[in-house]
Image (cartoon, rainbow, N blue to C red; front, side, top):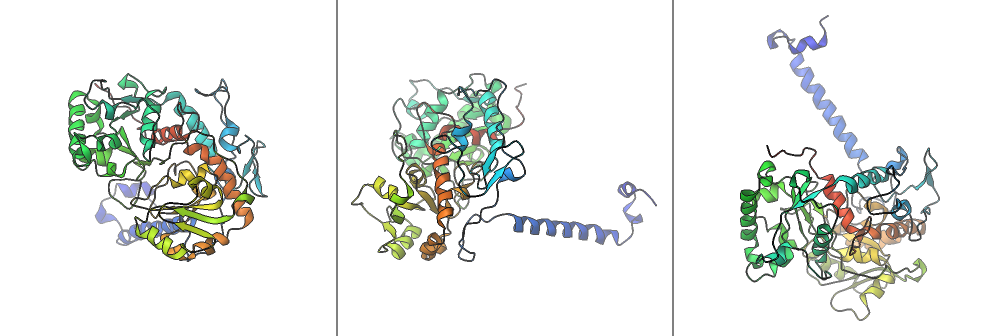
Length: 459
């Protein structure tokens, strides 16, 4: 019998006639089995009324790969005197306390919770170390006397307002060890324009941003060789205001190739490409340490307050406006917003004009478990964090079943969720200067994951 490899060299006419049926049929069968395997082994992102509303979390990656911190040879990070293992995985007091009666014990004696807040904590820690050591960003330079310096340079004050994340990131980046003045050493190139500040510039405004971006890309691609080498695939920009999604309408290469770090990160809408782009957490600035309050002091089941600027919010208020357990408000509150968050077990993030608001970060800051009512939201740090371990996503069609869903969560399951809220909220805070594992470093890690493996030569 001829060796199977000889079939590759035989004339097609000499092959048996049934070969042309057998090979495609085999490939089709294999593909079908693979798709079925993927469907039945991939957990659903949303909780639906078609499924039971009890929380059954799969064990994390630590099942097959026990989490062991990988330390640098000198036992330190670039920014830390000692590797902050407890700061990443522990509670507010730095201890690693179980959130359920079952724990996973690795081969090296590490005890990890069944519900890990990371998809794969050991890989994250190893990569985080490498990122801090080697990741480099080149920023296109602009002079302080540039007529648009206010949009290109970092602000010289403490950022504030609903879109402060954009300014916090640029301010932290420009003063970080990630910056290189040698573009040959750069992994990525930063386009430093601020969408939020251009929007308020009388010379540009919302209607002129598209032309401004088009002309800016034309200028840097003429003056520098870096954009043309990759068509902008190793470039990125940051935009927290939703206008950033349409700002690239006259710069097609930016929209298709460059990495967008955006607050308005929806799978459903054009202008955002999941996996190429990444979600920026929208965070209302707070300088104080997060408050601590026990579960027993949270008397309300769930809370929402906000303008009725979407059908989802309209539906929520319609069903739950007068409920005694779910407090759904619109308009001005009679009590402080912070007190409502501190007094509620669950806090509702509900889609408005866009999928994003600052309410997720608000919930985490005040120790309230977020309920996400925003279909197609590419959640911040979804590449890193296991959102099912500290939040609940509910499809908007299930708003009438919201109370049933929340009441179906046992006290142990709630304790697990809230314990993980206290662990992850450090990742949704900005600091000046930034500190390890805060929002700035998490965004940098998202960028590091998207860097190119090939560094282009200028030759």
